[in-house]
Length: 355
Image (tube, rainbow, N blue to C red; front, side, top):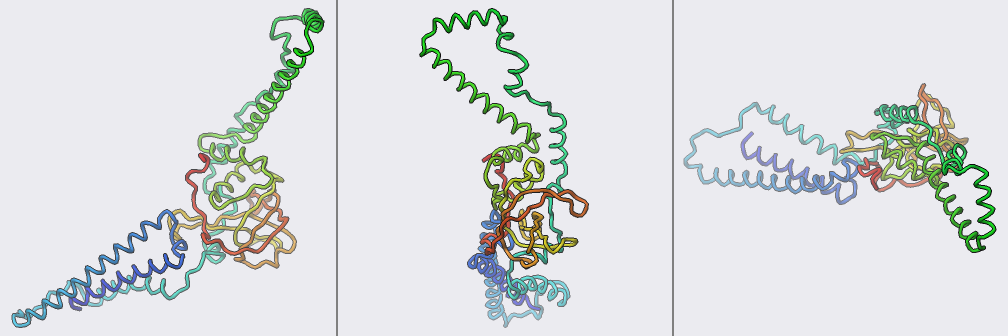
């Protein structure tokens, strides 16, 4: 294999990869392979590959021209890259094979087939059990906080001011005799205002007790407190795995809460006919590190819905035991068919809890 052939083959392969990336960008299929935050770097790499290909082709052209002008002074030896020809061919085939596969095979979204290989995660804290452990520790270590009502029962206003009951009664009678009606109305308004403030403080304290946290779980606890009173908790794409982690960490607090989630249908052993999982693939960098996460769901008539069908599901949250692990379960109230989103995968939300 001549040096010209080497440069030509390298140029063709580099142009092929550059055009393949351009094809993925133009057809909005680049997200099937990499996370959006990596897209800019891949696009820039396509430009770099094109420049390198042009350099290889230019080298081939220069050698061709040089050979034509030096035929009369040929020393009879050609400077060929070291190595056996078969070794060079094998090296180029290794680069050409993935390019051919990417070009010839259809670009599809990861679904049930890949979930079978990787295993659907029905609990997001299985990969990080320390989060659940810290929440349990906080619950055990936390002391019951006194609400304003408890304080009122334990210590009366008269005891805290150092005035006995008789003196208070005399003062109240005197004040009632001399106070004008306007002052009585003003005092009533102040009491109502204080009652509202105390009610808000009690509500805040109860949420703190319901969702205890540590430095590692503060973002999840903050989110849990913010959505606890929502009519429906939407498991949105932007924070898909983070929201599921929150629901798992504080599952008992969210029992009975209405949930809405979108994903593809997936079934695994030993699910019953009326059961399936609503899943999404979570990607950090590229499709190689994508992991399937989902929510266990059940309802009568589930067997009529095929695997990999994208659906929007609404239901109430509960819990169950599956494969000897306690997981959350969605009791489906409504289900509707939907198309796969333009961005089929979900990604880590690095700003979760600070928004």
